[in-house]
Every structure is written in structure tokens, then in C-alpha cells.
Image (cartoon, rainbow, N blue to C red; front, side, top):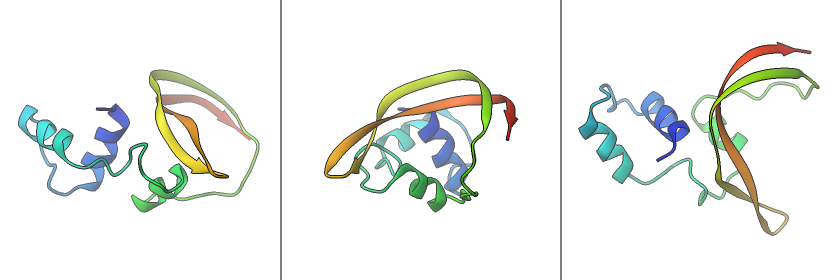
Length: 95
């Protein structure tokens, strides 16, 4: 189970008030609302849990990456496009 899924599920599911082994096991057995088999664009998934899309801009960033995977994908122009899931802490962001 991906860490980003755990974060999204716990923050958006009011039933997940504790981080016990039992609650995480139940979460792992539930359908993955954010996984690679979802047809919508990753930005749409984030909007669905309260994410806000800002204006398009060029930025410079430095992140401390904690975890990265390439297990995500979404359909684009008739193909499954592989994308990475990253859990990282922004250290520097400038426009």
C-alpha cells in the first residue's frame, strides 16, 4: 500500500480517526480510490479531495524526497501514461 494513498484516505475518510494496525488493515482491504486503475487525471483526483488548482506558472523547487514509486498511471491520448507518486517535503519554492 502506498504512503500517499494512506495519507489521502485518512485525511478524507471521517471513519479513520485512529492509526491502529486494525484500521490500516481495513483500509488496505478497501477499494483504492486513488490508484492506477482510476480513469481520471491525477489532478482531478486531488481536486476530488479538496485540492485547488492554481494558475500555470514556472517555479523552481527543491524537495527532500521520502518515498517515490512509479506504480501510478492514467489514460492519455489512448495510452496508459506512467506517472510517479512522490511523498516529499518542499524545502524551497520560488516563482
